[in-house]
Image 1 (cartoon, rainbow, N blue to C red):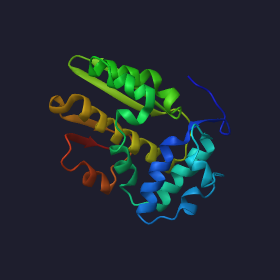
Image 2 (cartoon, rainbow, N blue to C red):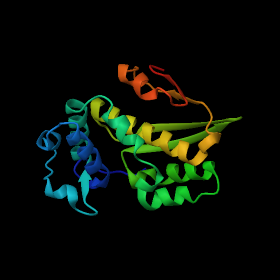
Image 3 (cartoon, rainbow, N blue to C red):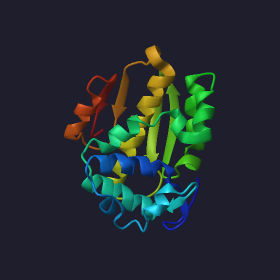
Image 4 (cartoon, one colour):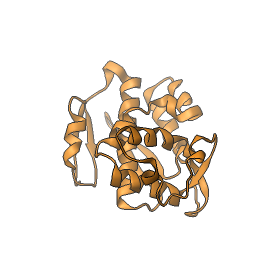
Length: 194
């Protein structure tokens, strides 16, 4: 496991500016979104800029506090394999969906060290488990998981296309009212509080 302190700059900032742009288009002022992050507007356009877990936590908390409820889910739906750079392209060029998932599992700590993906197979079923690997505030954790789960669904739909089976999504968190709005028309059965 990759170990780092709250102040170590190990998280790639490149995933946040599109989310912030989405939020500002929804009417949220950028200064509110950057509140407590110690990030400047200019840093958002820097290539290969890294932020700390503390900065990511503050940014995700601001998204949770100031943005409409579906923001993280809508943003995650925009993140297909190509959004994850070399790791995404490696998954995209994998011969099977299983290989693509294994690449995500193996390299997620490099792409986003706050999150891990583990895959377990049992009989005809594959279980993909997402875990937060760093202590985040509850709202920040929720925003990160909503984005990741939505992105995983987008990637699975892209890779499996017409072979996408009906998916079961189980979370420890209680179901929030906007989840059913987002899941409408998707091939997913959702179960919260389990």
